[in-house]
Image (tube, rainbow, N blue to C red; front, side, top):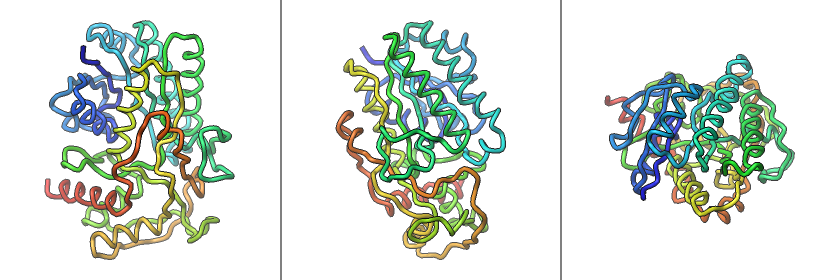
Length: 328
């Protein structure tokens, strides 16, 4: 029997790519999204869409029971670090309180498999990089705290035997589907490669480098960038891991190498053959200097190996997507 999977926030950037990935793998996909930072058009034609709030426990329970859903992949949430510093209460409501309601609906429905979109922000500003899953979790912003709180809820629930889960700690996600079916459409995007690609095609006048005085080789922040299609494949692998009856686990999602903001912008210029209009601004609140993943565990436990581990290829796909949006 085909597994039926509910994607909360499935109309978003990562959710829509994962919807395509699961459909391609033969799963029945259901999407729940309030479209607050996404659009209906991003949902694949083969997925069943419901407009609604992930915090609506009765709605979620009905979706699971009436459609015989076997697993939930939870993408829905707020993701902008500086915004979380400015509006912490809103982030705890959207990311923690609503996740609590979702988990409650899953438990009441007898659902056994849950994949959670967590974040490298749970590590804060780690003293050692690459950072492994066993490193101290010391978030430096409300966004990171909110993700860690949900991780803890899931660990406690899994300890009772009621539900198994995989928490995937994303590093910096970028790029677009190679077939042009999906990409990042979110309003007021803050992701570096997205913003740089928008600038390269004339959709923004300039790009701001938020701080060039960090304790890094060139003074700009260093991040581990993972192509969204590889991240989608990690969700599929996590689902199959749980279907195999494996124990709950927490895994980093990255490539294990870091690129600075300056190196990423150089890649954009290299790929497009045009200079970017760059300005240096002050540091953003809540930004750690360096975040790079240790990736041995995800490769070992999920048998997952990236297919797009190349900065220029990531940048090329992002720019191609922005050109498509500009043409639209």
